[in-house]
Image (cartoon, rainbow, N blue to C red):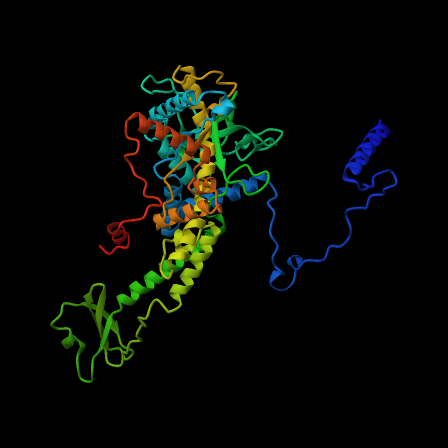
Length: 535
């Protein structure tokens, strides 16, 4: 059998060689060269000398150690987000920019793939938009949040806890337009029961399959009352919730995977936790020092033959009694001038003045260096993440914004992929309720429920210049329309379909040609004057 395969392959090589008109060497006598040779050189990174002598990273030896370390990082991240203004601001900036008021699905059904007419596809897309708009205000199982608010909470959880956990129950409530609901759960409730810790297929509360896929989640039940009523970590106090029931999702668990075989998320601030804490402590100490300096008491020394009591006789004071070394009575008087004070000292008592030149000249550069390190750890430009535009020109800030938006758009894309799961389930329920008129839904489910999740556009510092630059590059064939649309978070085919639909609607309403385009037209003098700000 092997000889036959060898002959077939040799014949194929000869035919290829004949077509190329040059020989190709192949045969039993063609000895292979071993690909592994000893040409490796030692690397300085592995040395144990100098500053690297005591650099010995410690490997976690058990799942319990791994879970305890991750839990400690999460708890510190929670405390940091709740107490540190820089961390709180970064979390809010990310969540507000990525999600804002919520990502909105825009159906992008392809008529060619579905084998439908454009009119049929547009009708289905209109039905899908209506279904989502009807369901979104009632998306929360607790009846408090809209779907946009749930997305915002998911993004905040991703940054603060390193992951988010959402249950997708089907609620039997006639007051709701659809049964599908979302219930956001605190990730710390996801853990391995103590009596199941020895089982090899449960890791940090997630029951894994043979390929490492999540089969079920072990979520601890809620307890009522004070600390004494807390439930133990036995399996009887947990709920085992399967990841899926058939093809329908029951749990959404999302995190940014940074390591192979990772099953739980790590908080966003983990690499810079120490920097955040040290900066916060440094600023707090500097603030206290400035307060103390501002409240420095004035010291007045009594001259020869002058009684300190006479100096303070006209003022209400606070007396502190004491004894001089010779045994005579000593009285020290203070006059309270909140926040400072005046101290009337005895003869021979001289103060040591506290320098008031705080903070020092190195304070600002030092804080800036620490902030830049923090910005790098969260993969964001310093002017954007800390909203510090001092010393930044237009080109520098625009470059920083473009770099930041690459991160924001990636986060938005990942969140949209997760939102696609409940959206598909919602469309399935709408189909079963007869509110989505499609054929062969289950055969073409993913093509029928295909959408783009769009949020607030990034905007531009000078949108007219940006649009004109795109127009010039497209006309000179240095850039495609698809690239220009993709930079704004859109899709070429979808945009053209929407433009065609808009043109048809304008013509149907008798409005075609009433909105003149200003792109490429010469501006009149009044418009030029207004654009240059000389009005």
